[in-house]
Length: 221
Ligand code: SAH
Image 1 (cartoon, protein in one colour):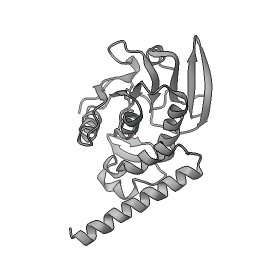
Image 2 (image 1 turned 30 degrees about the vertical axis):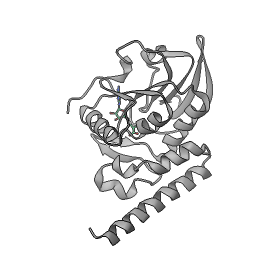
Image 3 (image 1 turned 60 degrees about the vertical axis):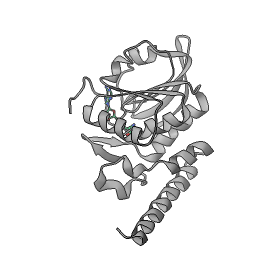
Image 4 (image 1 turned 45 degrees about the vertical axis):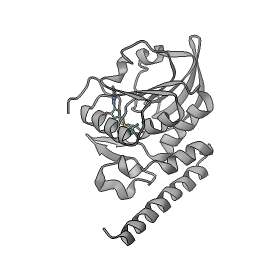
């Protein structure tokens, strides 16, 4: 590839990323550091290569193993809720997928624990983030419904696959005042944000959203 072509390609990516940011701002994403980070992460590296030209579009895209990366607005919304409501200490993410959400969490939280049930995706995401120099993430290949194997109290739990019932092992690992972000299929598909207050859950935000389902067990390679 000539230098001329490469410069063209870089300009094209930059303009797609800035269009994505404009669109996010018009949809209520206002946190400056979040917008800066999302403008900075090369989204095209997280999707299947055949879809890299669509990486900054407002649509979910394939990441392999029949799974998808959420569209930018969904990632931005969940991240903004965390930035607004959570203590940015330790976060548990269920559904590493491509690792895109993980990379954003790693930028803002001291420590990220992330679980993926598909071995291939788990390995790819780990390699991708390590190559990007991200070092405050612990990766686990397993069924996230069981929670993290060691008992660690979390400031936030974020589930990036749709649940039909609340996984108790995950809510149990939250600290008092911890934040839960979870897509739930009932009564209609939606993503919500709750704060743990003793044995009550205070709902802080909710909106309609679609996600791939949270599944049982783990899948080797
Ligand atoms: N946050 C991801 C999108 C994930 S899609 C990203 O930014 O790319 C949801 C992911 O959850 C899929 O990779 C799927 O394999 C995973 N998943 C579904 N059920 C799971 C479970 N029980 N434990 C861990 N991961 C699970």
